[in-house]
Length: 572
Ligand code: ISL
Image 1: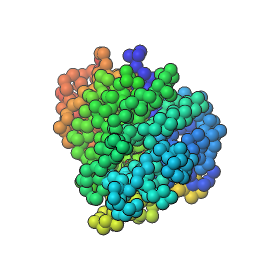
Image 2 (image 1 turned 30 degrees about the vertical axis):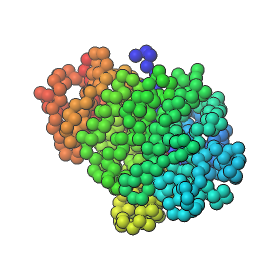
Image 3 (image 1 turned 90 degrees about the horizontal axis):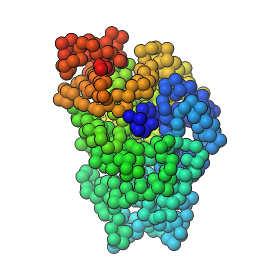
Image 4 (image 1 turned 45 degrees about the vertical axis):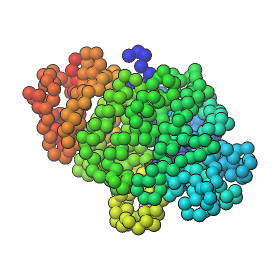
C-alpha cells in the first residue's frame, strides 16, 4: 500500500481552455481566465489539471494542430501567463499535465513547411510523403497511395502540387502525420518534452499515441485496409498499435522520463487498444506509461453507420466492458476512468437523464465511475452536471470532425438532413465544448463578448453558483467523491468484483482491501428497481455516500433503488 504510486489516489480535472473562462472579451477562454477559477478547482479538491493544447496553432482542430510546441497561442495568452497558472496551481498542491500531440503537427509547423518545400529537403522524410499509386497520375481519382479513410472523413492523403506527391494525415489535411521511423523526429520530440519538464510541468497526456508507429513494408510500402462500408479502407490495421510502438515508448521513457518518473503522470490516449495492449503499456516493469484511456466503453452506443448513427446503450454491455478492463488490469497495470472529455457527448445526456433527473443521474454516474479501481478524470462542467448542447441547426456546430462528416454524408446523399442533425445532437464533440456555465448571467459568466460557440441556455439553472449553493448538488457530490478517494484506501486499491452482471438497469459491485469492503449500487433507470445484494450488507453496514437525502435501506438482502439512485455502503 505504501508502495502505490501517488496517482492511485489522485483525481484529474481536464480543462479545454477555449471553453473554460475568457478574461479579455474575445469570446475564447484563456490562461488569465483560468487564473480566475483556480479556487474552483482547489475547492473541488482535484490533484491534477490536464490542459488540452495551449500551444501556438492555426486552430484547425482547436489546437490539436500545433505550429510551435514551445510557445503558447496568443489566443490563450503567453508563456509567462502559463508559468503563472502553473505556479498558482502548484501553490494549491495541484499538478499540471500538458497535452502532447506528436502523432502529427500543423501543416504550418516550420518542420512541415520545410518538408513540403522539395523532395530533397533534409526534413522531407520527417513526414509521410508518397508518390501516386503505381501507374496512375497525381490527382486522378483512386491515385492516393493507400485507400485509407481519415478520422475526419475523406482520404488521409493530400496531394501537394509543388512536388506531385501526397502526404499522410490521419486527421485533417492541416494535421500531417510525423514519421516516427526517422530518428531525428523522435529526438526533436524528446528534446521538446524535456524542455517542458524542465519548465516545471508534471507530465503529459499523449494524444493518439498508439498511432505513431505505422506498418511499413519493404521499400517503405504502406498497405490498403479492408473496406467495410463506403469506398474508403480502414487505416487501423496499418496505423494502430504498429510494430515499433512499444519500442518508441520505451525509448521516450529512457530519453525523457528516466530519473524523474515518480513525480510525473504519463497517460496515453489509445483509441482501439485492447486490455492486452493496455497491460503492455502500463506494466511498470516495461517503463512505458502509467495508464491509458480505453475507448471500448464509449463505443458501445455507436451503431452500424458509425458514431453519428447511435443505438441505445445496453447497460449489460457497459458493465461487461468495464469489468473486463477492471479484471485485466487488476494485477499488472492501471486503469484511467472517464465518461466525459472534449471528444465525447456529455454522459448525463448520453447515459443519464438530463431533464427531470439531471442531478440524480449525474451524481449516480459520478459515483459509479469514481468507485472503480483506477484514476478518475473529471471533464470541465461534468462536476456541474452540464448537459449536451441540444443544437437544432447546422450553423451552431464548430467542430471540424462534425463539419467534415456532414459535408461527406451530404455528398454521398444517403442520409437526410434530419438524420444528420439527430446524429450530431446525440454524438457531436461540440456537446462537450460549449462554455463552462459559471453563473446565470448572460453567456454564463464565461465571456463579456460573443462566445465562439453558443452557451447552453440551461445555464440559467445549471451553473457553478447554483451548484455551490446546494449541498446536494453535482458539484458537492464530486467534492465528496474526491475526498473519499483521498481518505479511504479501499477506493484507490481495493479489488473489484462485479455483481448482477445480467441486470439491465442496476450497476453493482464491491471493492475489497484487507478487512474493509464497499458495496456500490447505481440505478441507470427512471423507475424504481428492486435488487438482491450479497449476504451481510443489511446489519451493520455504514452508509458512506448517496444521492438521496434518505438513503435506500437494505432489508433482508433486498434493496429498492429510486430513480437514478446511487449508494455506497462500507463494512469491516
Ligand atoms: O473524437 C473521436 C471520436 O469521434 C476520435 O476519433 C478522436 O478523433 C480520437 O479519439 C483522437 O482524439 C484526439 O486526437 C485528435 C483530436 O481531434 C482529438 O480532440 C483528440 O482528443 C487529433 O489530434
